[in-house]
Image (cartoon, rainbow over all chains, first blue to last red; front, side, top):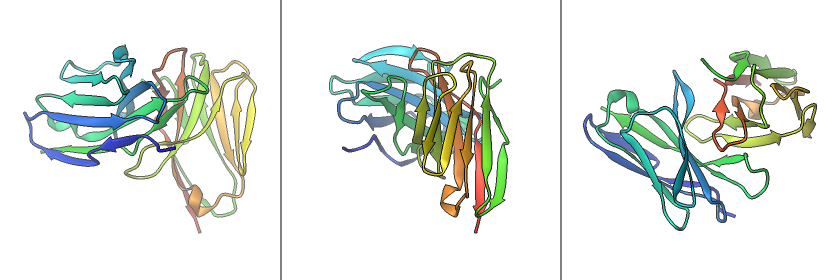
Length: 113
Length: 110
């Protein structure tokens, strides 16, 4: 069974631009969560989607948004990029077994210049 | 402030030695996961523990969930260089939002 896939793996943007990241969950998984990982803050929860609806949200500004499609694929968008948005963005899907276990993708490394 | 406190932050040991990583909180969790992450990659799930007092063994790795479901530990026996990585604990409280510890960087020297 294929794991969680994320595209692109690497991205370089400049301040003020916007970016869209994509995540395909494990087949059959319907919940997708997004996290931001930085050396200073560690892993921080952004939001979680289930059946195309945002079910949980972390403490990030409105510049961070997401959506989920009917096939459970999810996208995350960051508008008006700031230098501090440079991070590894991780997507995780939740399995059919223990409901809180999350399986992570390889991440998208975003660098904002 | 991290909901989950991991200790130590860094650990460097010789191949063949044992090590223990701790994950503590004042909050109760419905489940707790341990992950290992290598540079530039996503965290890889090692185990999920859900029952207070539960002990799970995965080859040389032993995971324990505290009786009160507020803390956990990861013990590695006879560590190998392949065990090198960032170990993360993450707790769930009945929703799909995991709270992560800051991580423990483990280096096993050959």
